[in-house]
Image (tube, rainbow, N blue to C red; front, side, top):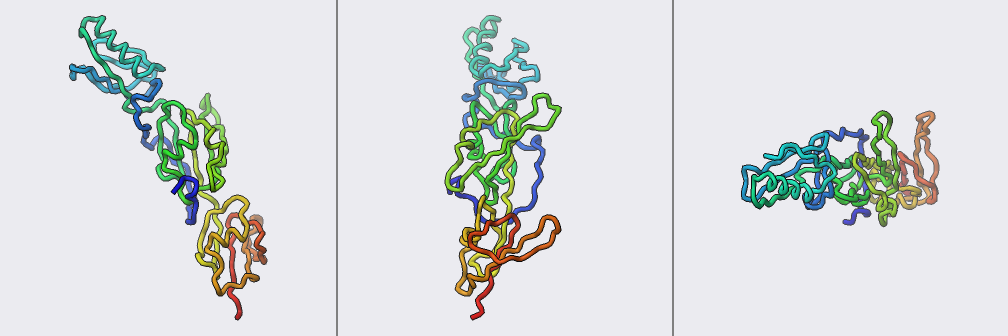
Length: 277
């Protein structure tokens, strides 16, 4: 099923944002060769061909350095894996340690440029950004939206001074038929957190084909809601449809006769009565 046709029925519990630090980083396919530059926290696999004792896996330090056998500390932040490999080859050759070294450097784990996605997606977690990553591409990497997902997604951006609340971007990701241009155009950056909330629900019962709870679409009316619920049964009284809605001020539920063009609100209960004869 396509990513944008996956919103269906289901009951959703309220959720809170889990801490991103507990989620594993999931590197994109071919991470080692595609990463344009490394940064603090990245794990590098250094392979010196023909010299397995000199090969090692190292983590780029907070100040951008790595420790290489014989060469000591090299500052490599913002350099590509290929450039780092050539520097190591040149250092081993110049120091007389190896006459013709062949070195490869791959990024085993990307930690310096990571975006997190939480909420109603198939595979929430932390994903590496290799070059450019759009919101639409991240949703695809995360397996797409669950059938309980809302159309509105929040992207939280890190605060540069780490002293205030994160800035937020609200994005409508789908028209239920195709992805929005905004979702494809929005580029994500390191430290961004994407949160996909659960869609608000409405409920149907009585003489409908499939009574239950359904995600509410923007601008949905009674006719569309009944269609999602399987339509009316042969016993239904199409002139006796009501909406039961809770008053947000009093907390009391009131019932009103519904027209097919009436708009549905979150939490509404649509009741279709049975015909008398």
